[in-house]
Image (cartoon, rainbow, N blue to C red; front, side):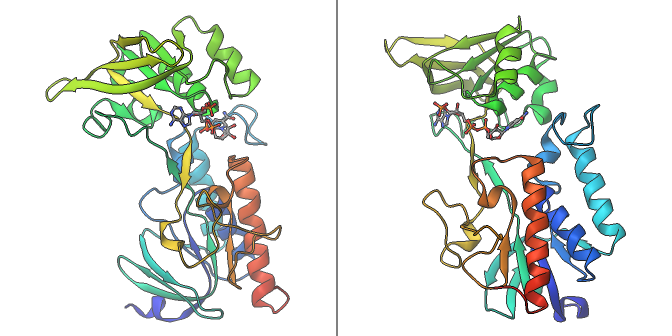
Length: 314
Ligand code: NAP
């Protein structure tokens, strides 16, 4: 273990998305020399988002990666240290939390967890086989492969509308497959998708199977209308799954109190069930899940960590 890792840290932040970087900014400005263990998805899910139109202060919109780079640079400017290490296990002991990574081990007075969430999958035949070869959870990453080709998106929320609209830049046709007859997405996103000439909706329908072959990848999507059981094969060459997320809390099972969906339970001050361990962002929020709310709870978590270290926190 290197010398730096052997010292007890004031604050170790697990996860480098908007919550983690904002926690790092506030902890650094409070002179707590935070270490951020970013893992491999640097910048979190936001870095995979094409365009952010609703982060206050950026009326002209900006790219997700750009926003995350700016947040990271701002935290580093005040002394936050980024470590691109993956956490493999944690042992939370009030006063000396131990966090092991693939390369090192850290002891910290306080920890802020901001590990976010990951896209949910359908669990249908073909999904696994063709993942990365036509099946994707990220239009920003893979959309450009589908120039003048047909694609399908599953889901009825904002993410599905966003993915579908983004894909219209490349694809000749975009189907949005939704299990109900009514969308969950916000009004503005619904309107944009419903009005788009390249987008067609498959209402009240589910994906039964992803079809394809070893050389071509995905060649079609078998869709079933729930009310009639009628089956149709869409000749889509790409399937983008946008049906929500599950929290990245595998490391914290049996270590912290989680809700029935696996999200970390926090109180109104971002405190978890273990003193000195705080959480912010999507890992503890399945309601709002916005960059701005993640940044806000990350900020609160760092401020609470500061109070805890100073002996004023619960
Ligand atoms: P979401 O709002 O939870 O929507 C998930 C969608 O997937 C729902 O329509 C749901 O159907 C469907 N679904 C879930 N499980 C399914 C399954 N097994 N098979 C088929 N369909 C399934 O998730 P989200 O769209 O990722 O959005 C999450 C949050 O992020 C929301 O608060 C959203 O507003 C926010 N967000 C905002 C923006 C933006 O502002 N531009 C962009 C992206 C996300 P039902 O409707 O039937 O439940």
